[in-house]
Length: 308
Length: 286
Image 1 (tube, each protein chain N blue to C red):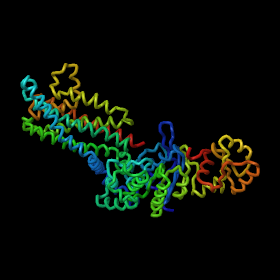
Image 2: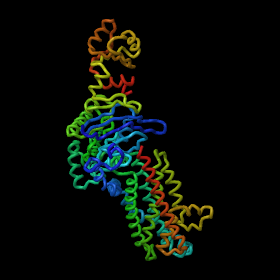
Image 3: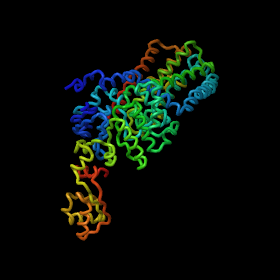
Image 4: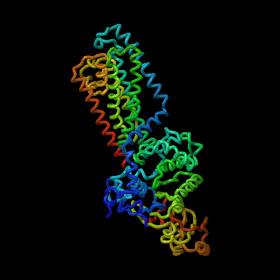
């Protein structure tokens, strides 16, 4: 097995008494696409800052590209591409200038930066916008420009913190397509998300994080197999009735979760569970049979939904 | 444990080793890259910069040095301000004030922008740029802007016939030192602000404006009652102005006082610069 590009052992980051990251360990192999999945405040972004060598760990050990961030911060950062949660493009500069200026920060010669900038504007589908002001771009375009900027140094690892949060579905799909291309080219991706569909699309492997600790680790399909059933039946009886009905159907399926707005019945065969409910004389307002997702894994592990 | 796991240098040829070699340029030149960035950003408000640099000297030298001077010279003669025309007296002070004005622009809102409103400092720091280099780069860029502004101002002083002494050009350097010495302190203070709830406007109104009025700018400090003179003694603008006057028209003061002016401004510069670097390092490392 090739030497991992990121090795975290018992990593801890505390703010006064509060441990944002509370002893997490993971390894990321070169070319791998690794995800940190968890709700807001789980410690994902803090982990990203630690790996990004812009935050000093409180405890544990961390190596990025074989280097200790405490000692080799700028060196590690020279090989990373960082896409932060909130865009921090320079709005005083034009689109193209944002890339030119950023390339210089890596000590790259002007001509090389200019060449790379043109390639990346094409990659980000922003060639027409090269001379636009940043504020004139749509949310999706700004994200693509931020990703282009993160790629200016041809990084070994690309860190993406909630890359598609706040984007409309079309913009998300365009972005996923670009990220998938990077993955195909062999770029190592480390991404955080609280969207399970995003994690399923992009991650080879992921860890589920909650309250600064790792709850589970594995490939998306493997996690679903381990922590959930094949199918899920979702039924709604109306907010007032869900709890009562849940008592009546207790014992159906492998497991039942009652959420404020619906009941989830985990089962190998959702349709047959629905038949049993109807046979019991109950009439749901809506019903839906779907495959289990990472959302269900998270619910199982933490008792909470990802987006609350 | 391999060498890599002890925080020691990575083996030659490894990714880590290549990273170390490719980062040498940024370790050395990072501050200049930041300055480059600032110059590019300046273009967004190039008009303001140009109009201030050329318009200010004309307006102030004309209003104070010609308009007000006519009144002062006619009523009090040259005795009023130490044996020179009021124009010659007030011009070095206006020059230093111009430096302070540029410093007040460049070391306040652009710092709030970089940390908060459009957090480009975090973007720089996500690249191999270190917090101290961000501060250095800003100081370099502002130095250039103040220097050019003061150079233009001085040219107008010559044009108005406001510089009797041949050593007058040295006043430009004094003004630059004044602007930077005061400015870096202001930058450090601004860097401590996580929210602008009017603090900067208060600084403009209750620090910079009184400083301009009570630093021996428009009248000698000695004219003020003693209990107000301390404002001048701690004011970087007073130290700068007095020294600029020494060079511009040969204001007579003891040598130790001139040396003190330089020292005072140099210490402010050193302390403010170091303080700003520290705060920035703390703020970016979250």
